[in-house]
Image (tube, rainbow, N blue to C red; front, side, top):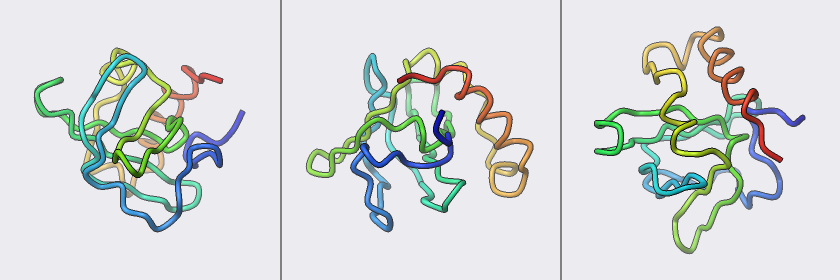
Length: 116
Protein backbone atom coordinates (compact mmCIF):
# COMPACT_ATOMS: atom_id res chain seq x y z
CA UNK A 1 0.00 0.00 0.00
CA UNK A 2 1.21 3.49 -0.75
CA UNK A 3 2.08 6.17 1.78
CA UNK A 4 -1.06 7.90 3.08
CA UNK A 5 0.87 11.16 3.57
CA UNK A 6 1.96 11.54 -0.07
CA UNK A 7 0.19 12.59 -3.28
CA UNK A 8 -0.05 9.71 -5.72
CA UNK A 9 1.38 10.41 -9.21
CA UNK A 10 -1.98 9.73 -10.92
CA UNK A 11 -3.75 12.56 -9.04
CA UNK A 12 -2.29 15.26 -11.25
CA UNK A 13 -0.82 17.20 -8.33
CA UNK A 14 2.07 19.51 -9.18
CA UNK A 15 4.39 20.37 -6.28
CA UNK A 16 4.32 24.04 -5.41
CA UNK A 17 0.84 24.69 -6.80
CA UNK A 18 -1.51 26.24 -4.24
CA UNK A 19 -4.69 24.25 -3.62
CA UNK A 20 -6.12 26.77 -1.15
CA UNK A 21 -9.72 27.58 -2.03
CA UNK A 22 -10.26 24.46 -4.16
CA UNK A 23 -13.57 22.68 -3.61
CA UNK A 24 -13.28 19.17 -2.15
CA UNK A 25 -15.51 16.36 -3.39
CA UNK A 26 -15.95 13.07 -1.53
CA UNK A 27 -17.21 9.99 -3.38
CA UNK A 28 -20.79 11.00 -2.50
CA UNK A 29 -20.73 14.79 -2.65
CA UNK A 30 -19.09 18.05 -1.70
CA UNK A 31 -17.46 18.37 1.73
CA UNK A 32 -16.07 21.92 1.64
CA UNK A 33 -13.04 23.93 0.56
CA UNK A 34 -9.32 23.68 1.18
CA UNK A 35 -8.33 26.08 3.96
CA UNK A 36 -4.64 25.17 3.73
CA UNK A 37 -2.41 22.41 2.48
CA UNK A 38 1.11 21.08 2.64
CA UNK A 39 3.14 19.26 0.02
CA UNK A 40 5.99 18.42 2.38
CA UNK A 41 7.44 15.04 1.43
CA UNK A 42 6.06 12.36 3.75
CA UNK A 43 3.69 14.81 5.48
CA UNK A 44 1.42 16.17 2.74
CA UNK A 45 -2.15 16.99 3.70
CA UNK A 46 -5.21 19.14 3.13
CA UNK A 47 -7.09 21.02 5.85
CA UNK A 48 -10.69 21.27 4.68
CA UNK A 49 -13.20 23.81 5.99
CA UNK A 50 -16.47 21.88 5.95
CA UNK A 51 -18.61 25.00 6.39
CA UNK A 52 -22.19 24.19 7.36
CA UNK A 53 -21.87 20.53 6.39
CA UNK A 54 -20.49 19.55 9.82
CA UNK A 55 -21.04 22.86 11.57
CA UNK A 56 -17.99 24.75 10.48
CA UNK A 57 -15.44 22.16 11.53
CA UNK A 58 -12.14 21.54 9.81
CA UNK A 59 -10.88 18.10 8.83
CA UNK A 60 -7.35 16.91 8.12
CA UNK A 61 -7.08 14.74 5.00
CA UNK A 62 -3.79 13.01 4.24
CA UNK A 63 -2.68 13.60 0.65
CA UNK A 64 -2.97 9.86 0.00
CA UNK A 65 -6.77 10.18 0.15
CA UNK A 66 -6.74 12.40 -2.94
CA UNK A 67 -7.78 10.54 -6.09
CA UNK A 68 -7.72 13.41 -8.60
CA UNK A 69 -7.15 17.14 -8.90
CA UNK A 70 -8.90 19.23 -11.53
CA UNK A 71 -7.02 22.53 -11.79
CA UNK A 72 -9.40 23.94 -14.42
CA UNK A 73 -12.43 23.42 -12.15
CA UNK A 74 -10.42 23.99 -8.95
CA UNK A 75 -11.74 20.74 -7.47
CA UNK A 76 -10.05 17.99 -5.50
CA UNK A 77 -11.59 14.53 -5.45
CA UNK A 78 -10.97 12.28 -2.46
CA UNK A 79 -11.51 8.52 -2.37
CA UNK A 80 -13.58 8.58 0.81
CA UNK A 81 -17.26 8.99 1.61
CA UNK A 82 -18.68 11.96 3.49
CA UNK A 83 -19.43 9.67 6.45
CA UNK A 84 -15.82 8.40 6.57
CA UNK A 85 -14.55 11.97 6.60
CA UNK A 86 -17.11 13.10 9.18
CA UNK A 87 -16.16 10.19 11.49
CA UNK A 88 -12.40 10.85 11.23
CA UNK A 89 -10.43 11.99 14.28
CA UNK A 90 -11.27 15.62 14.97
CA UNK A 91 -8.87 18.16 13.45
CA UNK A 92 -6.67 19.68 16.14
CA UNK A 93 -4.88 22.78 14.87
CA UNK A 94 -2.53 22.78 17.87
CA UNK A 95 -1.43 19.16 17.47
CA UNK A 96 -1.30 18.70 13.71
CA UNK A 97 1.97 20.54 13.17
CA UNK A 98 4.08 19.27 16.05
CA UNK A 99 2.55 16.03 17.29
CA UNK A 100 3.66 12.93 15.38
CA UNK A 101 1.22 10.85 17.42
CA UNK A 102 -1.69 12.90 16.08
CA UNK A 103 -0.60 12.33 12.47
CA UNK A 104 -0.23 8.64 13.23
CA UNK A 105 -3.78 8.52 14.65
CA UNK A 106 -5.20 10.20 11.54
CA UNK A 107 -3.04 8.03 9.26
CA UNK A 108 -4.21 4.83 10.94
CA UNK A 109 -7.84 5.90 10.55
CA UNK A 110 -7.52 6.57 6.81
CA UNK A 111 -5.25 3.57 6.11
CA UNK A 112 -7.96 1.36 7.58
CA UNK A 113 -10.30 2.71 4.93
CA UNK A 114 -7.89 2.36 2.01
CA UNK A 115 -9.49 2.25 -1.42
CA UNK A 116 -7.84 1.06 -4.58
